[in-house]
Image 1 (cartoon, one colour):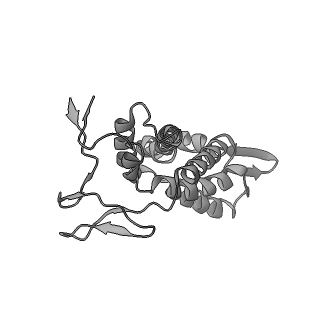
Image 2 (cartoon, rainbow, N blue to C red):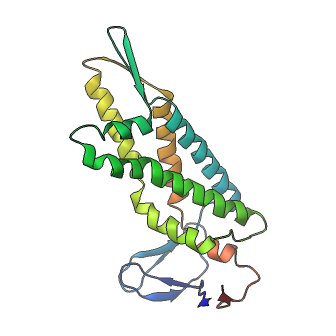
Image 3 (spheres, rainbow, N blue to C red):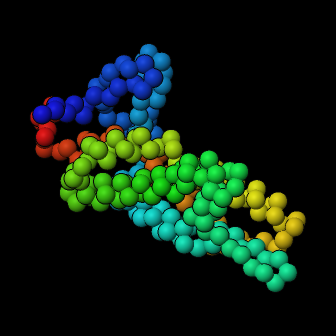
Length: 211
């Protein structure tokens, strides 16, 4: 049996513990010891957050099923999706980075979007906590530094510029979806998720024993 103290927040840098206080829109709570940001007031309500997460899911699907670029040379045509681009790294000198690349641009964003849909979908239904809420929240916090869609987009643009001098290169729907995903995943996954503990904990006393 574990006790839940969701009214407390611990600084990630110096481990100082504080009692969580309500913030007005735009306010930021900082550590009194090291001045690190503890948490921010959320500018999104549940409905907007969930809607943007659904939009991110749609952009993710398009980015992974539609060609990112289309290459033409002397009547020959080739195209690649994000998955195919990551898989292509496994065949050649860049093979050691194939798995980290796939994790950073495909697996991690997929997990972030899926977990947010799960948590926010239940929270929208009367402030309910989703099954596995604590594990989902820990995973969302742990996955945040490993999502690198913006790095993938930068790499794609650099490749397109270099290839354009040798072959005919046309951007596919996947590259626009990847750009949209980069923006959306930044918005939905960088929100302060701690306030969801309070939002989904209405009616339960603080410090109640949780299973």
